[in-house]
Image (cartoon, rainbow, N blue to C red; front, side, top):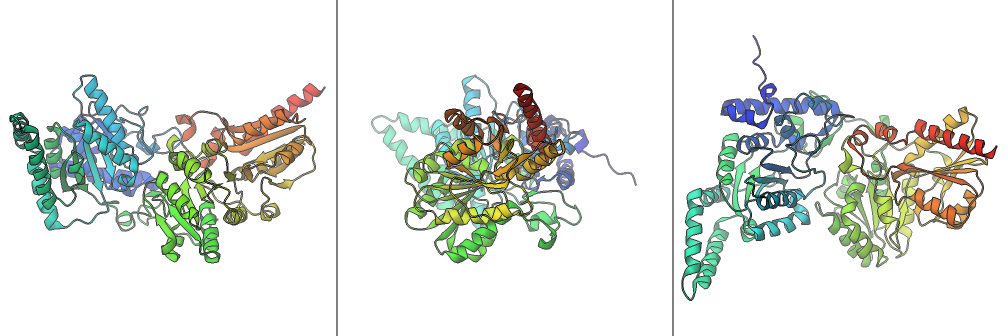
Length: 640
């Protein structure tokens, strides 16, 4: 029997959706799910969140006219269906691969991607800005912000909601709720009342009534305010959540997020309104793929897997330990030893390796939601009253809490430990998730220590050192999204503030000084140099701040060439500091800095595996060796 032609192959733009009937739209949703599962199983990516918004994506693009109407996806990790509906089917197999489609919205990739996203809680602010600009320029386009209940825990979302209610522009906020349980009875009443309140006839009547009330002589304003208070009081009786209404939004919902007909009908009505509105949509993460439905957290961000068998559960004895797991183990050991140790995460319990801690020490575990600023200041509060808080936050997300680190922790010399996971290159997520700025951001902050472990042993030693420090300020441990290397004796040496450890010493010509995450690459470069009969010593920096400057300067007087190799941005990084130190103290060695070129990673340097990203940015073993050979040979020629 001949299989029917795939509807998805006929969708070249959102306009093609308007030609399909309801039955075809349902079939299209299933085709999209299958394509997403197949692609993510091969390339890795965000699965559960994307499967949960397929019908919502279809309804949005059927009702609105992108790119004239702007759709902003909060975080953006649920944009796969959107990409398939906006002409990117042919290239979808390249998702998250070098030279391929990004895993998040990108304006440079498509005119239908209205705003670049990657971090949470930004969509309402961005969509409101887009809408305000549209109105200022005399346009008639709409703006829609799609935000999940998780991203709504971020304070920035509430700042934007408050401003949107104040401006009164017709912003459409879709609350994608995939966690809440909703009472059917109360939900039914709320749905009925909200459908009435958003109807055009009701809005016309309300505008006329409000205008008439305000014009009443002598007490028009007082009468209008009384009516407004009575209206809100009545709504409070029936609405499960009156928060949005109090901010000046119409509230619509809850609505089944997998019912295309219901979604389309609501969106068509809302599109005609001329005021801000929140549409409460209830969806299920992982919809349509059993494994992801059963374990949405496990299938949030995944590597490649078998479609039929799901994610393989590998035995610990057959796999290497990641730096995240090394941190998790070290923290548990410390918590057993010291009852003051507490753990904090900003909605990344599993990703940051804190699930075991949460299970064993629930009374000492705090998940603050997507609120990194609060996480740091909350940790500072814990520390100021005698606890030893450890906040595990991805490097790319600590950028959101720079003021809190400096003002609330460093200024008060509070012993807050910040475990910066995903420091350095992060595979496949593009430029928004690279952890390349933490060194430059925090090296200048007083009363702050920054350490970079090279192995599991160093992770344990450095965490213990941090926990033992008196009230001297925050301590940061930065480590990559990578597997720990095999241990060498140097990695077990005690931590000495401001100094690193030697892995090899004695050549007298070249010294390679590296941040811990680049141990493998630096060691490989040394082997390549050795094959060229160029001896190089290896020095693991360990501390990026504070630094024993006298010791480092003495080291730079022992060699002809010192090369600083760091997995971070060059400008403001450790290498620049060391080069300036050498110049200031008149050190005899030539200094070279191998780091990531200043500026954001362009598309051709931001996608790929960690190994590909290192190579693309000149920090793999071969690239490091080639650059050293060139510089060393130049030195030899100048000597002659």
